[in-house]
Image (cartoon, rainbow, N blue to C red):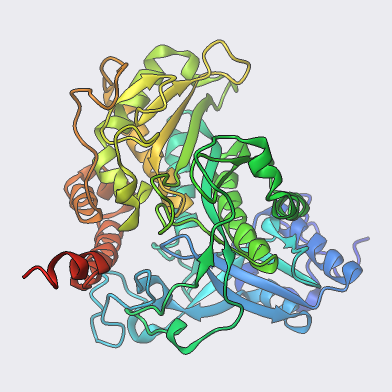
Length: 500
């Protein structure tokens, strides 16, 4: 006989049911709209047990916004049961803001201009926790963390939820007979914090952020993979290793990169959806752990003090046949067609792979970053590097065009969309280049504005994501770029103020 806290077989629809719902939890928002599968219900039960056994007092409910930045609420233990029953509300206007927190749409107008109902008046959306993502944060005492998807109050999908967007594109890929594996190389910069208190000039308002923190160098640069250089940062490296390991992130390596203050972490390959979640958590973990040790970590591509070495996000990707599990890129026709799609749609995809104004300062010749749209066999100057032939890992494609600040869900989704079109049309990538910085190949977009124009002009993205999603994203990024153009920079002041 089932206990009073279990659903009967009849309630489960005639078969085994793993929903460990308490009687008081039945009929809530999540249950009513069927938003969890059996594995998630089981994970929710495990989450409750961990909270009780470890005596956790707070749980962070977070979602990744359009910029891949986490927002959310921290709930007390007493509020956890209700959150697992019905989710947590948050203002829908968070999805209509540029990187400064400034709304790019008329949130309080009768017509917000976003092209989708549900955003007027900054009304709420519901953060639906995915209990399979639950972690205990070792750097925050008695605190858990869970990643959420977004739904409207009627249970329907929020079209601007990046996590949902990626799963939809992976579903299209599965319909074509393939699953995607992703490996991550994520570069970033770490500086010594030179101020310990917040000053008034550090504060700002939406559209006008305050002054960046004052920082100092932690490594000299110029010596790639120098062991002594990494050893000088051993305290931070040890903290990062312990922290990332404790939240079950598949850390493979911590490396000293070429530039001053520049590090790289690599993550073990995983299914694409899991890899995107890993990047979101890894970036937050690195920043929070670094802050607690007196450092400032940034995933900005080219911060002041980078001295010529920008940070990139190299996205390794491969496909496997969903029926046989075999590596799909072992078939040269599949590899070439998918690669052809990545190249054909690179200009529009750049709005997702390189979504910040600063990122385009990374596209430089002879800098281990690409400056044009081409591919090469194991060539790190090309935009896409074909690597892994005759290796145990199998053939994979490494897109080297991305920046570490990219929204991982949209970055990976852009690759799926591009590659699928290549497979559908049998696109030819042409011949590999041996001199990528001198190749007769189209240039990558030179600015965020150029990339957004290319995105809007490429119908493949609107067909895959929906025209309202492309229009929403383009408006956010154009708003961001317009603020950049309106700002009088230090360069302009130095260049013109005394001369003219």
